[in-house]
Amino acid sequence: MSYPSYGPEGNPYPPQAGPAPAYPQPAPVPPPTSAPPPLGLSPTSGPPPFGLPPADSPMGITTLLLAVACFLLLVLAGAGFGLYVNERGTVSDTRAQLQERDAQAAEAERRVKDMEAARAAAEDELSDVTEQRDVLMPCMRRAQEIFDALRGDDDDKLATALELGDAACAKAEDVVDS
Image (spheres, rainbow, N blue to C red):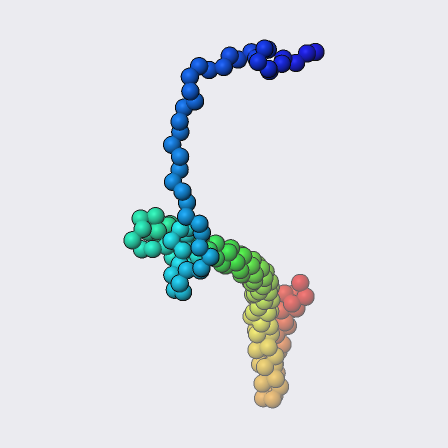
């Protein structure tokens, strides 16, 4: 591989004809001073080091408005998240309370059923006792008549009372024993 030579005899680009163009020269720059600026004055170039941009600058007002809007959105987002978390906690608490109330309601229903069964049993027993009482009362009245006849020493009354008492007590015995 060979490289092209760039000399007067082998120059692939021909030299330009005419004088070189003249470019404007920059103005001479004064030498920098080594003295610091007076106290209380800030440099005039670059952004301010601290604080807000000047109020008369349109860029400063826009930046300030955007910062306030972002801050408000951040506060609203935080409040919304707080409400969401609070509502989730409230919903969980409410669910727990509902489950507890459901358990209490089921327990109350069970007790009501037990009480209804006990009431029905007591009603059945009461009806049995009432029936037995109704059957035993004539037998007891006849027994009282027998005692009255014995006290009065009346044989005819005693015989009638014994006969009626025997029939009433036999009927009572059949009902009570069944």
